Amino acid sequence: MNKGELTRQRIVATAAPLFNQRGFAGCSMQDVMEATGLEKGGIYRHFASKEELAAEVFEYCLAQAVKLRSDGVENIAGATDKLRYLISKFVDEPSPLPGGCPLLNTAVDADDGNPVLRKQVRQAFQDWRKRLTGILEQGIAAGEIDHEVSARQMANTIIGTLEGALMLSRIEKSREPLRDAQRSLETLLNTLRAQP
Amino acid sequence: MNKGELTRQRIVATAAPLFNQRGFAGCSMQDVMEATGLEKGGIYRHFASKEELAAEVFEYCLAQAVKLRSDGVENIAGATDKLRYLISKFVDEPSPLPGGCPLLNTAVDADDGNPVLRKQVRQAFQDWRKRLTGILEQGIAAGEIDHEVSARQMANTIIGTLEGALMLSRIEKSREPLRDAQRSLETLLNTLRAQP
Ligand SMILES: [Mg+2]
Ligand SMILES: [Mg+2]
Image (cartoon, rainbow over all chains, first blue to last red; front, side, top):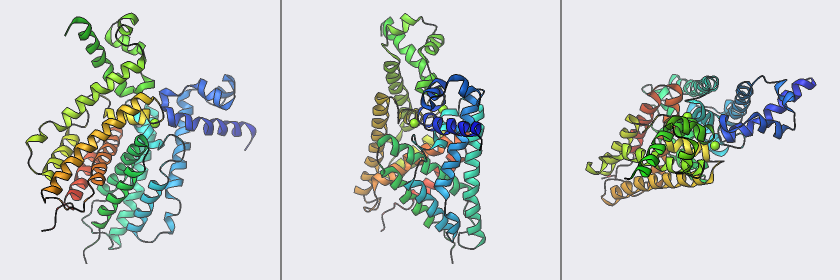
């Protein structure tokens, strides 16, 4: 990586917790200048606009979140145990950086706003759902999960329940909502089992 | 209501969808001036600061959300049917005004920010949970719900699952995540029944 690329990376990594905590409208290029110690020209040489920086910050946060929350799942055998593992990763490591889940934050921030971010976060949720439905469909094919189970419904429920619980846990500064979500999802997972 | 009170009410009602869609940082007093057609002095005569206006906007949004989502529950007999009713109200009428759920929006917006809003939204979730645990505990007392059920866990699960699904439904512009949450919550409600 040359010096320019390193600076670009440093700007993204420094801006990420700012955007994630304050939101798109709540974080200015001035804030990024102050946090990086760079002059205006030093930032704009790499990013033509706040929109361009925010888009790259989102991809950076997303990649970290996906890695943190799914690392090691490939070593787990069985669909239900894979889902259990992914749920426990989310509950134990709800956020890759200060400010909580970048997907949740960006979704709430951009659902009536920035169309570029909206598209990115929509894609991120689609990819997450696809990873979960893939696991569920493997479990159905293997006879572990009942073939009448809706993979889409279960995937949507896991994502929504975890993100909603994280929102509650963060505002209440308590891990209880996340733990309660994990227990309720465990009850649901136990209803998926194929009947012998 | 005198003229001053009417103007104050009008400022709050006009500012509510702006704050709810753009967030605290994304909505300026300038935006409120433009939307109301009032001069700066006309706004500041009623609200000393954006913080003060935002606090009143939140209470206004919250009152609407609670009414929209719980109206008529007093006419439903039985704890499980009361919960079903409240879930269907949320799924059918997810938001009282443009921008989605003001509790979710304010929670994500304020969890690292504005301490007044943070306190208000924390209280709002506590009150919501209290309404749900009250219903669950009545169901336990009446022998309808198993006495080993954790009312807190189920209440947290209902709130988090609905709010997370709403976030997904809004970003994907699809009612499917909310419908999927309703189906999964129905499965959970069916596990609460007291064993005869
Ligand atoms: Mg929004
Ligand atoms: Mg936040």
